[in-house]
Image (cartoon, rainbow, N blue to C red; front, side, top):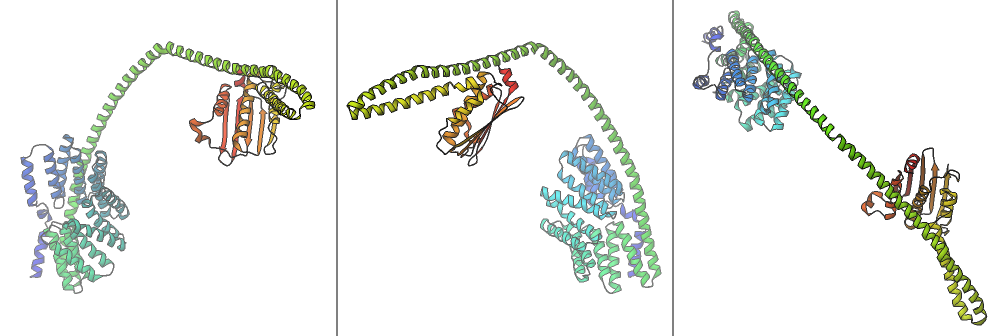
Length: 609
């Protein structure tokens, strides 16, 4: 009976085109919906579903449906439907054995999915490309696409799509000989199968775990996984997983009778599910068993069935290649049409841009012509305003300096003379009182001391307002005299270094006065605020620049922290240097002392005259 039963399956396997074309009940239902539908997006969906349904049992029919859905989706400008049609066509070409066209189609689907933002399409495409490379034995490249698909699915939190991909990764690692990685990813996939109730993927992962344990040398664990896979597969159209599980049990079984029985079950499951590749593998396995048992007749019949299945697969591949050629030509024509459309659109856009550019140039030219005179007047007005502002500032500074000299002269010639006369009269009175009244003499002597102190203060103020050395001997000597009058209390040590500046090389009096006032202000700031013990002042004249350096070792300050609250003195010296065309540089930090550098371009000074 066993031989008769097996012979029945062999005879049916010799004519695989009979059962390979059998549509499912679901396909019949979809076909009726398709007939009653209008040429809209619903028809695209029906065609895609029909193609998916026929992918395993009749890939050529699936390709035909896929091409129809793709053509209609493009006519309707239904981008998501076009992407899903390409994904389905890729799987159909893969099932038909045309892997190059399958990879090309899936990559095209991925590019479209990226363009329209279809994240699920990107994941599907990467998984399918990885599967195609795995089927061709290129496991490193397959893993690259699988892992990219998983990363994208995790990023999108699309665990439903990620679930079957983990099993594909495990299969690729197993075929590459990395059983530990294969077991890790397959177990992870199995956990997601159970969590999201993906029974198809669960059955496949259980069968794959059996293959992993068999490869790891654990036949008992392998048999347990195979049995669980077969138990979960009852009533499910999963001929691929059943064939693999039964063949795994056959290889893991000890007695030859058990191996023969499981091999026959694998052949039966492949035949009932229309899994031609499984028929080929199971027939070859059974042929080897019968040859080993000394039954060449059965072995020959099984080999004949395997050859017939191989020829059927080869014929299917040839037909798929013809379909692929037609599909490629269709895609090429579509690409040429799109390229021509893009070229025509680009040409029109260039003409439009050229016209707009010409109009813009004319408008700009007209605008420039109309506004040239206005802009020229505005420039002239701005220059006049700058000149007037410079003259105003110069007048203010000259008036300020003249007022200083007037006040200094008045103090020296007026108040100074009066104090001198008062001093002489008090001296005379002091001599008279010295002989007459001792107590009054003391009071008068005190008054005389106050007059002497007032006389010295007035003389100092007069000299500061109108330094004689500055007018007669120039900036360098005036600075020396000024530093010489710093109170010699032994706390502050001053030093002056002048280079390239002498009495015969004078600048304009207004410039020297302004620089002297700036240096005065900086030294006064050191005396008032720095708490320094050393003050260094340097004046260096170069061919085209005058540099003044004032440095102290005092408490320092933070220039950025001053902001709008900076002292009037600092603002004054900045405005004076700006008028001369120079700059002020502060190098200061709390606790480190202060260095102030004045830079005055001499060409700017000449221009300011």
